[in-house]
Amino acid sequence: MMVRKILQGLGILLALGAVALAFILVPPHLQIRDISPELPTKSELANLKGHADGPVKIGYMITSTQKSDVGEIGHTTFAVEWENGNMLLIDLGMDKQVAIEFGELFETVAGAEPAVSHGTVAEFLGDDLRRVKGVAFTHLHSDHVQGIEPLCASGAKDISALHTNDQMTKHNLHTEDQIDMLKNSECIDQKEITDMGELTKQFPGIGIYPLGGHTPGSTLFAIPVGDELWLLSGDISNAKNDLIENQSKGLIYSYLLVPEDEARLEEIRLWLSDLDQGKDFKVIVSHDVNALIESGMNEWQQSEQAE
Image (cartoon, rainbow, N blue to C red; front, side, top):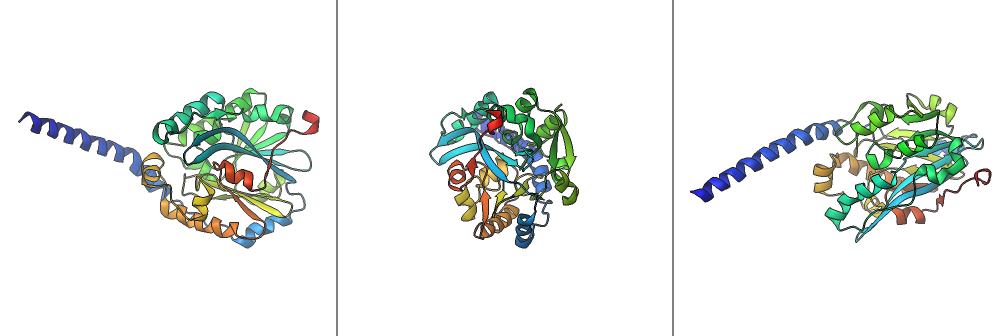
């Protein structure tokens, strides 16, 4: 009799837990499945390379890394530069404390080594911080956004934060805190990109396209530099090989940890994989350190004036 009561009690607790989990996860899953903006065509993307005043340089900064049996995860910022010296930063990583805390989850669930911070974006920039005119984000998870705090604390000011409509207005339990963080940041001015013409006035030649799939505001950045078009895809996949081989992140990740639309992600993976086979198209996956290094993109360096 006692065993039966214990089992009944456990059953009730499990049922209540399942109900609570469903209450938390069902709304964001329904939301993300309703976001599927039209993807740009290959010719539309290729036409970006013809802009006379487009970017002249792109480079990466790896703000933190974490090693595990499946490879090395990195948190990366991309710096886009124009001839007049203006810079746009795409994704901002985290400060040291947040990076270490963020990595503790992967230590627990994946047996990863402790995360190693290599510096904030502000520390990488040094005096080049004054050249930053804009920031943007492949999506609004904390490991891509929290670096805005040390950036502002280092004296950055009058910076435009660029967002698609989806990224500005559609949020879930994993992005709400970050959009509030950005809205409350003293050094940035939030801007919703309503048309490419308005974008071109301040940051000519680049493309910004809503994606969905991973988060409501997931965004692709297309950056033409010379003959190459760099496609910054964020966390559509966590590894370049997974993107090319059309491998999902698994049920636990996509259904419990991060509410994703796997059908939409597969559509985007296949689309990006096809683009990556094209001449001068290079798809970049945010967290894949080895693939980033092998891509041929240069590590960002301070300007001579800042040294």
